[in-house]
Image (cartoon, rainbow, N blue to C red; front, side, top):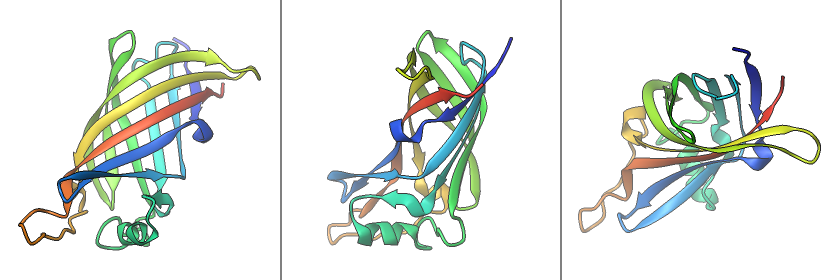
Length: 176
């Protein structure tokens, strides 16, 4: 089976995370700078996927919070400027659903994660570029990756939840 190389079209993609704050609201953050590639056949099953994000591009709509997230309390961007993902399995579950398993590296710690993937389809844009769309969702425990800072409120609740929801809307552009 012939394979093609695809690259993330960053201008039509987004990488988000969501974390509970004070257990009552959700804070959303994004990584503004990222890249990735996919080697796959026409069905995308068994695709080889790699991804990298610049930790210094984190944006939660609060410069003070972003600075704290880049500090050694969380991502330690000075020592670990990128986070990365490399797939180990991309398994087709139905025509538009996949399961993506791979190794996620954050702050020097690499652990396996599994993400649900919804395939949005393939289309050709007005300039002749072949595009494919995917939405990925999953959860991790931030403490597993050494992002363990927290504070306790007067009522005894955690300031920041351990669970982090991951959401990525990815548009790929076919390279070859």
